[in-house]
Length: 171
Image 1 (cartoon, rainbow, N blue to C red):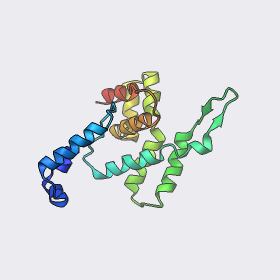
Image 2: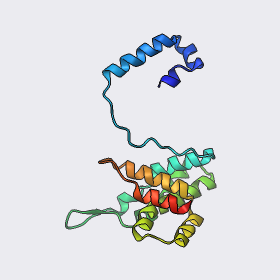
Image 3: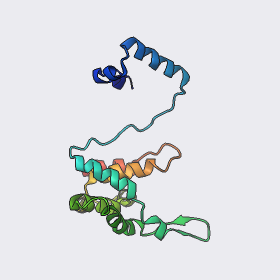
Image 4: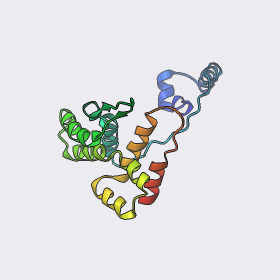
C-alpha cells in the first residue's frame, strides 16, 4: 500500500504529503492484526489474453459439478466426470461473452484437464505422458489453475506437491 499511496500521481489526487501518508499507514498498522499470507504468487503472463484465459478458467473450472455430483451411502461426495462435462458447459457459457476462439479453446482445454496435475502426480507419470498433456494444454496455465483450485478450498496450508512436481517435470 505504501508504494501505491506514495506514487506521484496518487499524491496529486490525494493531496497528501509523505509524512501524512506515513502517519496514516502507521495508524493503520497499529489497529490491524497480522495475518499470515502463505502464498503470494500470481503468474506474470506475457500474453494479456492468457491472463484472461486463466481468470475465466478459474471462474468456470467446476461448472460441471452440479450435474455430476452424487452423495454416496457413506456420505462421501463425488463428482465423476465433472471436468469433461465442465469443458462442454464452460464453452457454451463463455460464448455469451466472447467469440474469440483462441480464448474459448484454451479455457475449454484447461477446464477439461484441470485435475491432470493430481492424476499425473498420483501415478508418477512418465515424461512422455507430460509431453502428451503439453500438446493439449498450456502446462504453466494449467499449474496456475490447479494452484488456484487448491487454495480456493481453504483449510490448512496446502503443500501443492502435485503442482510443484508437474512444473519441475515440465521444465
